Image (cartoon, rainbow, N blue to C red; front, side, top):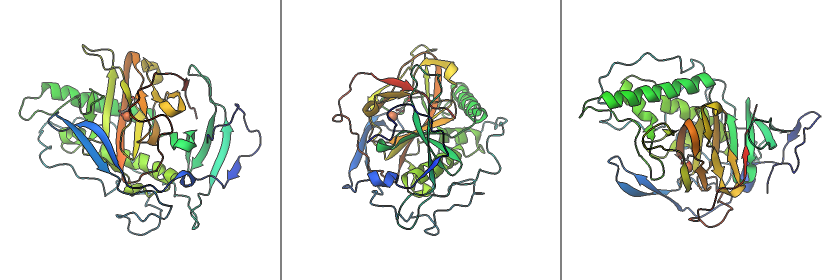
Length: 369
Ligand SMILES: O=C(O)CCC(=O)C(=O)O
Ligand SMILES: [Fe+2]
């Protein structure tokens, strides 16, 4: 069931309040199962990761374990989510001086959109507006947009729980790229055994990865980018899926991680073949400007769509959806990717059986404010 309108229409009248929609409607109670993914351990060896599903989606009344009360409102002045896994001891080995930091962490986070859920489990307060996407990609496609708090959500397809929103500002994205590259440059210069590690292969299908946590390690007192990113994304993701943001956790210490594609090196890393992430939810924040690379985008197999995000937009999708990172043909494309566990939206991939790597086909879609 696609929520996309059949033709691109612009609703002229006032936005309609939609009360019947809820992603929870699509949630099926399923037997707990294990996600599987080929992975690399800290030493670079291949391992198969089996992640038991921690919280199955059985309905809207989920009490988060770390939540002080069952209320879904969160202190909007809080700048960190206390439940994130601490850094492993032994990583903080660098005594390099902390580089001067751009003003990345805002002192006041924007107000948290309260999870709009009434006692009967209905999502309320969503405003649905049908808008046409603006030309800019090879293909123009309409998007269904709704609000969660002050955040505009572009639903790529609600039936598979796949959506886009503006998570970071362009300045924040530029700062993150600079921080990651500074870190990687230091790693190249650093002497062993105190060496910090730069771009490296952490997963089977990607080869230029860098855990966000490493940044903190190399800066000693660097910013807790991990918590900052998780909070920014999970507030909205939690509200969308109907779970408390604090139950959403990075799958391992490697998450979230920077991911770099470039044609500008000896062994170019241009894309990622078709795969599923095997976690509960995945997010990918686009750090690069569209103009900084050609090709690229995230192809979602069941939707036959390649999504090209604008700088600062994040794509969120269930970890079971098959997708691929389409090859770039020029330039550099940076993302922050995170494999998230803790809440299973219970949305299986509706396309063919897992394991089939079908050919790239379909439209390219961009979403605009
Ligand atoms: O490049 C992309 O857009 C997707 C990356 C991805 O799927 C992954 O790292 O698991
Ligand atoms: Fe992926």
